[in-house]
Length: 363
Image (tube, rainbow, N blue to C red; front, side):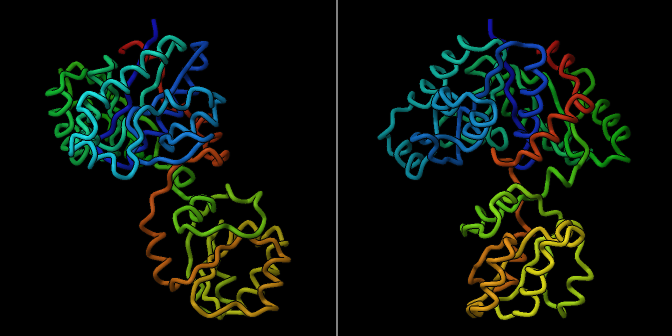
């Protein structure tokens, strides 16, 4: 019989995909066949000719199970899906039937199945299949991922538990994630007290790690909808800092922090040439991840040639540098199949942070 676990969360950006990757890695050490499913896919892409959820495509690529991707993502919410459902063009039973049928097929193939939800407990209600209902329909014990505080975590867990209880879903684990390292023990202690006697395991996952939170150059490219130029081998490089190149070239270069994504106005020829020239020097390459060249003014021909010859990764966009800066500052990075550095880091430290055997025992 296939063992199952539903990975939900109290909100967006809690780290469901990171936890799912960790559990996938740990489960594969114990079980011969481990599968993944994203029943409801609000963020879809075309993958191998199929329209599927982005996370399902990522897991299919990383773990080499591309042949299962349509089962892994049975319901992708493409534009118009919700309106068609509310207009009764899609029968009310279709979302449930698609999800249950796909899960049944995956259960035949795998010994352990990780089922990742989408957003907080209520996401999917528009098509009659919120996270809590999916967990109940699939008879999968639920693990709720939360943030790393105390009061706000307790409040958000209680809010989500009300829905899970209404849907008769079985929440077995509360997992605090993105903890402040020096507050980890204290935070977990209070969360254990808050949920004592409720029949749920309260545990913790990762400390807040900038390496997991920061975007890659490829993510920035996808966010802005603009191709990444330069050395394509560096597309998975992490951008730990975002800096505006507003000062003189010397001051900007002197104040570069580790792996900085530098936003430069297109008319700043001297700074663009300097950054390009420094790309081949290891000391500066470590500090300068790439460039975003912003503004309506065309880059001069000679500067463009120097940029292209250097191989430095860059994105050319017409918005102003300040607009791009604030847009990127609000962005929360997601993990994609090209993020080998992040995925390897998650796998390497998962055993130190997550007690899989304890979780497996309670589900």
